[in-house]
Image (cartoon, rainbow over all chains, first blue to last red):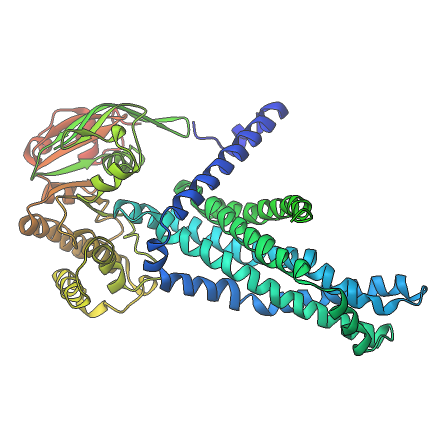
Length: 271
Length: 246
C-alpha cells in the first residue's frame, strides 16, 4: 500500500523520529553525490552550458540585488544604531565606524545574502526542478542521455557560487554607508569621523574571508540544497511534493547556513 | 531484443510487476495494453533504466540493465527515443530547441545541419510552422508531435511510446497512430507502445501483450487478441464492467 496521510498517522513517535533521521541522512548523501556528480563535469561542462550559467547569474544575482541592497543597508543601520547608543554614553559613538563595516563584512553581509538567496533563489530552484520531475522533463533528459547534474545542476551551482560573493560585496558596502547615515543623523557622528574609523580599522582580513570563503560556500550550499530537494520530488507527489520541496529547501538551507556560519567563523579566526 | 524475465517490482509498498515475462523482437511493434495503473508505464521505464527490477532481469540486446553502471546506462539510452505521455518538452525551450537538443548534445553537427534535420523531422509531423513556439503555447496533440519529433531526431533503434493517443480527439489519435507506423517504416525501428486505447493497439501493434496483475496474461497478434478466450482480455477489449478484473 502506498504510504498515505492515514498510514503515516499510525507511526509511533520513535518510528517517526527514525524515519526523519533516515530521510535526512539519505537527502544529505544525495546532495553530496549530486554536487560531486555536477562538479565532475568541470570545466568543459560549464563551457558548454555558459549561456545557461549567464541566465542563472542574472536570475540569482541581478534580480536579487535590490533586496540585498535593502537588507544590507538596514542591517548596517541597525548595527550602527544599537552599538552607537551603547557607546554614546562613553563618548565613543564615532567608533561605530570601526564596528559597523567589521560586523557587515565578517557576519551580517554574508549571512543576510545567504538568507535572501535561500528564500528567493534556492526555493525557486527546488520548485523548478521539482516541477520538471513531475512533468517528466527530468526523465526525458535522462532518456536522452543528458545528465541533469550537468545540464541543470552545474549552471545553478556555478551561478550561485559566483553571485553570492558579489551580492555580499554590495551588501557590505551599503551596510557601511547605512551606518554612516545613522551615525550622522541619529548619533551626531560626522561622515569624516565615521570614515576615519572605517579606514583606520577595516583591513583585507576583515573583508576577504566573508567574500571569498563564507559567501561562495553559502551560495554553493543553497544551490545544492535547492537542486537536491527539487530532484528528489517523485512524479506521483505532484504539486504537493513540489510545495514540500520548496518549503524544505528554505528550512534546510537556513539551518545549514546558521550552523556553517558558526564553524566558518571559528575557522577563519585561525587564518 | 528486449527481454523481461520474471521481473518483480514494488513501488510505495504496492506490487506493480509480479513475475513479468515478455520478449520483444527486433523490428516489431509491441503494444502493451492494460488498465490504468496496471504497470504499463512502469514496464516502459524498466526498458530505459529509469527503474530497475527488485528481482528478475530486464535485458536489452542481451545486456541486463541492472548490471550497467551510470556510463553504461547513458550509453544504452542512446539507442532509445521515448515519447512521454505529456510530451515532456523542456518548458523553457522553444519547439525548435527541444528537438535540436539531442543533436546539440550528442553530435558534432554544424548549426546548418542541425537546422536541416530539425526542420525535416518537424515537417514529417506537420509541425514546421510551430518551430518558434514555446511548449506552453501548444495544444496536447502538438506537444505529442513535438515530443515525437524529438524522440526520433537521432534515428533511434528503439522507440518507446507512453500512451501516445491519450487525451487526443479521434482524428488526432488516428494521425498519431499513422505517424507511429510511418516512423517505423522509415526508420525500421523496434517500437514499444503502451496504451489502453484498443483502436491504437490494433492499428500499430504487430503483437499485443495484455498486462494484468503484474503479469502478461496473453501475447498475440491483433487478430489473436480480438478472438481471445481469456476472460481478462475479453473484459478489457470489450470494456465490460462485469468480469474477472476488479
